[in-house]
Image 1 (cartoon, rainbow, N blue to C red):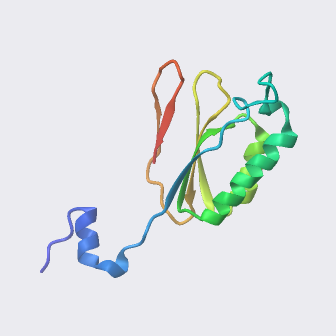
Image 2: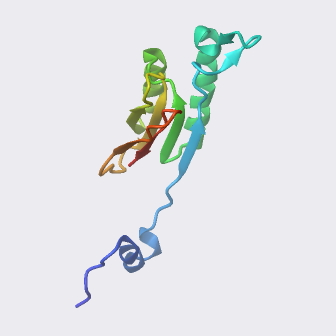
Length: 139
């Protein structure tokens, strides 16, 4: 009798190409409206929902068209409930939502969307504790 596969690579090799599936991943910096300067650099886009909502809707349109299995969003405005609702309403039917807020009360963070049906076995947030208050997500 054959021995059971010892690694994921062995399992794929044993199962053959029919069992293999392509995994698509997209990453996108959505440029948080808190940081995007507009006009003569005296205003932030966050003060203009008439500007950031259409821009974010266009980003969602693009993400829907890409239809990736995993989507990683940087500089997502996690503190804006309206924007979070917009993304969840448009993408929540396809994806699980994983979020990590940036430290230092910056208002933004990371959102990772994982297609329903793909098991997230573990999630880890990494805080770099540096001047930029950077964070990372491991799923």
